[in-house]
Length: 369
Ligand SMILES: *Cc1c(COP(=O)(O)O)cnc(C)c1O
Image 1: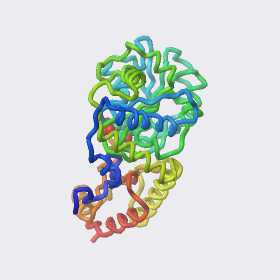
Image 2: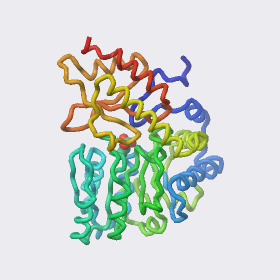
Image 3: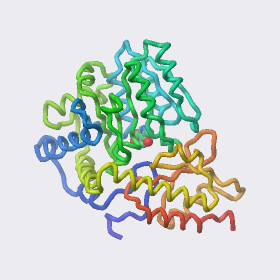
Image 4: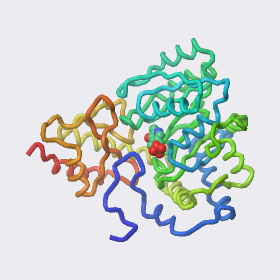
């Protein structure tokens, strides 16, 4: 095995299995103030991100060091003013994290909470915005990676726009893997990261923002290094320069990943592949007797939760190790009131991999033997 080969496939929600060409693109060093990097890599990445997100010309992209959460924190901490109030829709770990970020930063926040297996109700959001005119921003997760549930983005965006409030979407685990147009939906800020559906390696997040709104957020950030406005201004004024050391190799790998997304046929083609993977996975798992946590119609094409077998001999760790030995790494569950595990199907993962996984699972059901 050479250093560019992976010993097993990551069936996780990111970091995920990347292509060899994405990993190989990191085999050189970059100068952070040279045009070779700033203009030819960073600026192109920013442009491509905006064109992936919308056909509307009023948007801009900012890249931010750190894991995806840092970009969520930079966004919430920068764009919400002292007189503003945030409504967070929470039906899982990542919705709850946005509310937690707001509380850490002393931001006035209200939370609409749901169970992790429950869809947020558009009527509740409508009601909350109707009664509380102080709410200026609404934040929701698109694909709640906790369960794999796809939240009702179009309906929620519609109601937020009806009330003329700003909409922040954590599309971390969905952006690039499902067609959407921010301008058409009326999303004002969308957050994602390098190591999810665009299939780059970890190290930075990205925020796509309505430019005239972000332009009004100077001197508002509650953190120096997570000042989204200042980062954007620096990139705008200095042709893609980051304020502080940028993760150069990761950004170059991301540029390659964007090329490969294009070669695959764009977001529509990737969405199709992920959907094929997910359907094949559910079909194979159900044939083996596993049960999905969610009804099929709530599933996203990215990650699926399965109930743990109710057998006294079953242990996740043993099951996990057996699969790992056969070249597949799955993910523990994160749902608080249900015993389950998760299998992701994003990254360099194809239907033949899913078929091989289902076979490996069939031969790892030691508790049935
Ligand atoms: C992955 C993910 C994040 C960010 O997680 P990090 O570990 O900080 O990269 C945020 N929201 C959702 C929905 C995610 O799937």
